[in-house]
Length: 470
Ligand code: BYC
Image 1 (cartoon, rainbow, N blue to C red):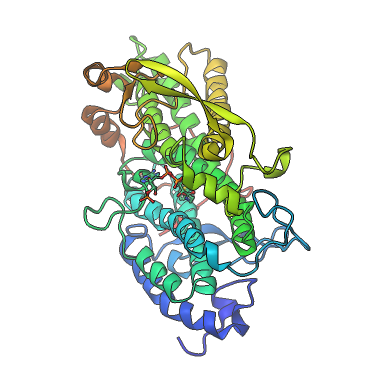
Image 2 (image 1 turned 90 degrees about the vertical axis):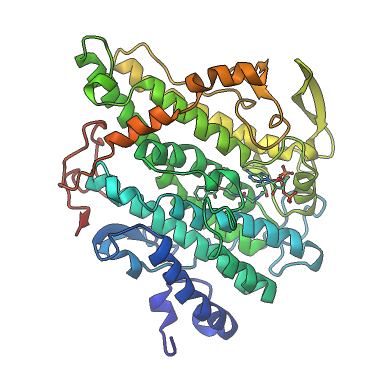
């Protein structure tokens, strides 16, 4: 690796070419990353030319440079959003003090933990999605999958830059561990539950990018408020890339719904499945599954960790500036807790409810997405609708995880839940049916039978453009 031109190989705006210490750390890590990418990144397709956008600078337009490239040659860059001059801490106990350019000793552990947790999700999602290239419904979708994958790879780089640049030996060891854990592995799983779930089909992929990537948007938004300025700047830039992932998910589900309705209308019994499509009831079950696992990613409704993160200035609220009170020492959030067969409202001090505050922003955003899907169904004159289950339904983390609730949030017995499970969540038979539809379509402009075409292509290219050339 000696003699490497870092600005060419790793586009960056962090002064990499003049930072010997950082260069040395990344020099060791880069081959390990590439070897992880070969082993755990998209299966096949590594020698294909994919129409990808690459971040080459943070200037307007510079981060959206489009070209056909082979994935291993993707220029994984390290970019921070521009520094805000004289930025001060916007919330918590240190409000008004200058932001930190180095890690304060007392917050070292907590900051490292939060960065590692965030970082771990990035390679995890690439691992979860690695087999999907074998069953892409179109070249357009195949390209979008790979775009998402390389950008998650870049987000890993962004977090590893922070670990290498600011956390010394401990940070370097954590960066190595990020390449050692594996999604779904019994011995070395990824850190958060959603990132250990299988992602074997494209309905799952579109639910994942709608709901799980959307958690990423809100977590990154909360970290963009951080008093640790390098973390704030790197997450601000990551957020600009995240929008496309959410678009891929939302439009993917909308296209499945549109096609499902088209096919159901052709069927004498109104059954999309009988015509080789995906029926709305199946989409609803997948939505229930991924939405509930993504709600878990916000942590417990009542959390002293979250209170500490806020107090110290490490993690803020979504768009902290829109709040009047940045101390959050007064006030409370009403949370329904289960007591026996009842739900009892409890007032939780605001700082302890910060996970719930962020989850509330996320839920409101998800509701808007579902509204858009339902508007599309309405336009097609179709009576069925998608709904979001209650935030209590099917939870594995937080205060609702040790009890069972129906999709409208009513407490029910475990037996009652199990009796309805097959109505509410994907069954083996649903997964087998969806799996049976997953046949690849690699002819430019052609779509799999179960999904409608997108309205337009990527970067003003036509839908039938050769987005991936083998
Ligand atoms: N699974 O007080 P609690 C993204 C653990 S996604 C397993 O409830 P806290 C992306 C927790 O670690 C964004 N374990 O929660 C999307 C703790 O364990 P310990 C990811 C979980 O700490 C798509 C215990 O339960 N970003 O970017 O207040 C593609 C009690 O914790 C889970 C972040 O996560 C879970 N779901 O908050 C690619 C941001 N939840 O320490 C990328 C950074 C909790 O007692 N992380 N636990 O052993 C954080 O802000 C916080 O760590 C969390 C949890 C919000 C995750």
